[in-house]
Image 1 (cartoon, rainbow over the protein chains, first blue to last red):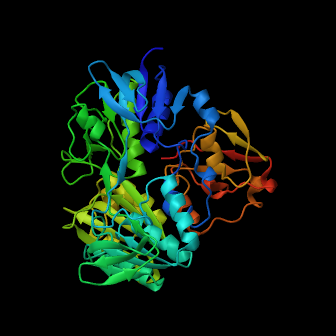
Image 2: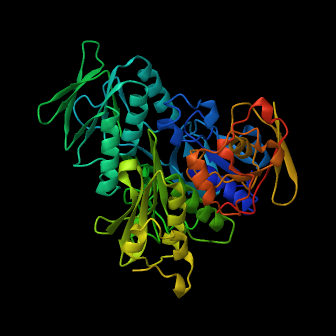
Length: 419
Length: 107
């Protein structure tokens, strides 16, 4: 068999890469290696619809078996790559099997950051990354009464939202001063703090976890905080960020900085090795410093960098150029983020936080660089275009509910926003 | 299983026997129907699974909720009276024979 395109990782980046390489005309063999037992599946519902019982595991499958046959993509599940020999262009699997490649793509993703405190790995402590993780939390929620969620980021808060909706008592413990502190401005953080408090979630911000304590049965029974408080619980869900799976790349001598370093086409310095998805760090045209490589943990970034990498494999390199976007669903609130903001950006509110429907525009040097929208999906879609067009906009216009945002996309001077 | 007809951009039609309970979007992606992107995986967040539903079936579908209604304002191709997000159309027996047309572009 000729050595073809070998993709390590069968989630969004790997799946998109295989599909895009075929669609762009790559005719060689394609092998997609996944280390889980399940064929590629949708992950956002793991912390949302699946935990709420609205979606089934079977309903998450992205592609039917016939798709893989039709596209001549060999999907190999429960296959873990353990070493790369770039000189020989070979990858060794966990079972000793050796696969040759023409092109190699690292789409190895990321894993949950472990909670490194005494008791951090007790039975009853969950992470949430994979389908198996979500099914374990679902099973736990059938009998648990009270759960401590450690980490007030997206995964922690979405899980808290689902568990609370199911009627469990939930404590959220966040080390930072505000929820979602790393990624959102205070107005958005406050919205979610209010929302969770209204729903009866106990929030503990600025609280650091000292240890987890086991009960008589050896399972986790309490979280001990540094200020001496003890929160009793039946289970713990940890969502304190992820670590890029870049060890294979490191061992193969590829440059890594908490992620595999690649260019805007997903290329490593090795002309036959590319990377995409959560494991990749790449220069983003919408970053504060476009030359500074960023690692974005999102489906959008995984898909768009995978398409760029596939374009290299198909012989027509087209770099990543999409506006980054993200979303999170908690209770009846849908947060959508377009672009990348910085703490120093000017903030302009449009809409009503009291009604739970608003957008927060972030401006840098007079241009819209990032927009956070709560239950304003039309504004979110428009925001992506505004950011892409790098339009100038005045704060007064953006805040005015009667001002038509669409007019900003018209380049004629007559359509310039009123000051 | 209800048959769903997808009218594609090249003028051809793909007919798929769809399992009950999946969405028109999911069935399209599972079966490699080109022209429905569904970047958000069906969470009603991205408006890239836009389709034009055949007039005859419009009345059999529940009306779009507020979120879908807003997203439809932002679809990349022209919005028409039959415009829907296919991730929000759950297949049941009454939809046997449903025809949806894929728009010119999704983004």
